[in-house]
Length: 319
Length: 249
Image (cartoon, rainbow over all chains, first blue to last red; front, side, top):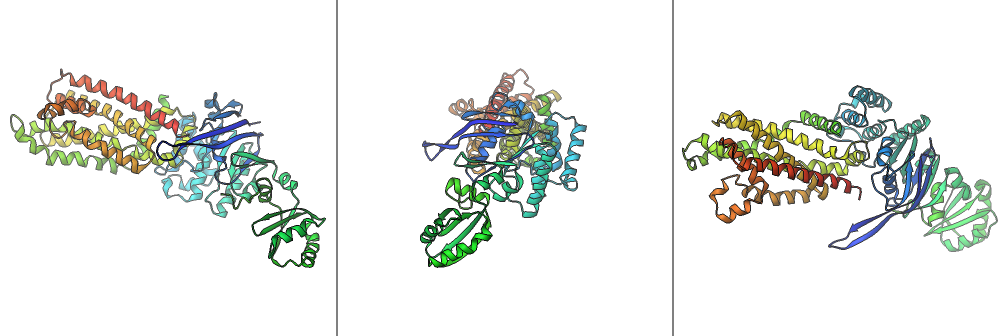
């Protein structure tokens, strides 16, 4: 295991106005284990405690309670050893806007112990990998969001760490750049690097990670592989808007092929296996019950349905 | 540890070399004071000459660069608390004090170079001082910069807000300047002002500079100023490195 954490907690003291201190429990007890060579995701809404968790594992923030071993060393008592073995790319990126990206890259390599020659060689290698050679000498402030993010990633990899932390790596990127970055993250795993990333994008966690945890309000609410988690709920979901959602729910819950129903405001979701074959029966049932349909759709269940099952709300609505 | 400090210094000097316009602009204010204010002091000197006035005023013009230059250097670091640079460096293998020390070393070098340029202008105007006085003055400027830059980084890391920082620096700047005898020697003032000035570290820098320029190397103000700024420099460095740790909450 490259990451093993037990009972991680972090409480911040926030100042609200004059002298009033308020305790904020950002992380309320998280256990994690990430295997070597895995892409592991922490999925959750903004403010769930993902960033704080990553910051504790990357030795930036000291946990209020709990322990964590990263790359074999304790994050509090052996922080220096952990820092030699990790790469950390924060949400903000950490690329100096005023200097050419190459300078940041060389400085990072030299701080990690490389000689000037080795640092230049390593920088050249990374520039090549991330297609940044042509913009290497331009001040970072003139780069596009995607280029800057690739520089941030390159800087995080400069010491060839066995583990990288990527905090919201694709936030703010356009779809093309996002897809490219996913490819680069997969290539990292294929080269044997373990990756812990946080995201609030469902599709990202689904497409990219080998295993994930869903974090909400500072706690892990579900853990598993994307496929395994979705298997816990039925494979398909019918989403309905009707004139009388409560009646429709009662009606559908009584059908033998419906595994579960959830009502969220006006929207009714019915989970079922083999949706294509059961849909005609479902429509007949609604019709004979006198429910008039506003809209209906049949989809494969997603991680959002998993999130909904465990937290009672949709990740799209959770702020 | 020294290696990391030198690496950060090299990086910062590289940035300075690519963009030398701002430090050059930074010496405009002291140069203007030399050109347009020092002549006003001519009548106050015993011999009534400009070169005598320059002996009194040039040290003040140099301290002015430290005050209006180095005290503002922390502004750049406020941005680095937000764009993730400090966050990244804090979890890198860098020795933490070197993050601040490398930047402070850059500020000290910049201050010495700016001082040299201002001294050049002053000598063109007729200032004549010994090389040893000049060398010691530049050293004094370096330790003044050590204090002013560390203080500025400490403020930046504690306040982490450009508006708040500019208010606080402005708030302290004027009384510090007036009570250092920068414009006119404090000895011209009443007793209470002379007493209050003793609590202003910059007062010692200006006094020591004037003693050096007057060739009065045995003056007690010179070792006092060096000792004071070294001690204050270490204290403010400790403070700014501690503030770096508080970034994580």
